[in-house]
Image (cartoon, rainbow, N blue to C red; front, top):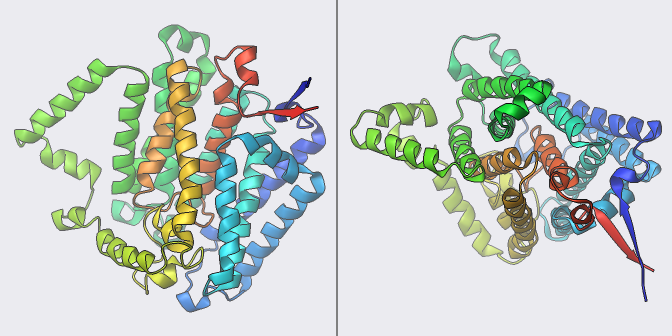
Length: 426
């Protein structure tokens, strides 16, 4: 005979004022890092990756403070126990293996630090998500945090070019990632609401419209081809999740016929690939040449890789990063890393598909945003790389889904079967 004790993180201590202070302190640490990487950004050569200058010292200090807050408050252990039955555990396992890869890395200290940094900031973000008591407050926080990251990233362009009237000066492949994630989420959730729901939940519908419009504006401002294509794919997933197959088929055929007739081809290309010549589109702005080179490097050490975070060295000055989310896994940790990271990807998508069919608040927006993030990851390392400004948006979205969206529309019995219930045999 055995009994089960069911615990949920949302019941454990996060209602206390002290826990909220911890979560806010962790968010403050993350945004100090964001400010350092945006307002105080500094380019570094490959030879300086392991050098601890003033900027690197700030990063080290902030990450260390976040680690101390997590450890002393007890949230580090509690958070990982909470997510131990979720896909997040595989993402955490991947970064643990990234840390182990310092043993065969060309720059051991750099590899070890980048791995620990991501694990700490991943834990900090998930702990912050867990402070919010319900779906509505978490959705508000997600929208506000995403907009805050957008503003910080846009300030880089202002610092470099001022308030330029040329879209070329506003071009970015970084803040457009946060833009497309927020846009697809807001669009999916707004379309998922019926007219009656919009009239009953006026505050939420206005919030979705407000943040959706702002994110669409910044998405257009960024003129990122990868993000534009990601937005298109995200919209397709949204229509599929809403089961609006008729509208999807009509719009697809209309666009296809216009393209064949030569009417919409140029317009569609200019929208999806602004300022891109045909040769640049065909080579993904030179990325295909880089990927061919990286593939050959992967084949040299396919099992364990060259050590996490060393794509800059492996690319031999060709790029600052892999322009892809999966090459850092292949290059840094080889097939072992791709196995761990692949389990994370497969499980998060499996949960998303299951939830799409059962329905609930947040699921349509999440599915569209997740699809956009993964498609964008084919051109920019959105995940499986070092922590960047948009990382908090992606991780917060994951925590939002696992802690709250999975619970919407479920019965009490169903809710107990989700990952967030920890079953302890006694």
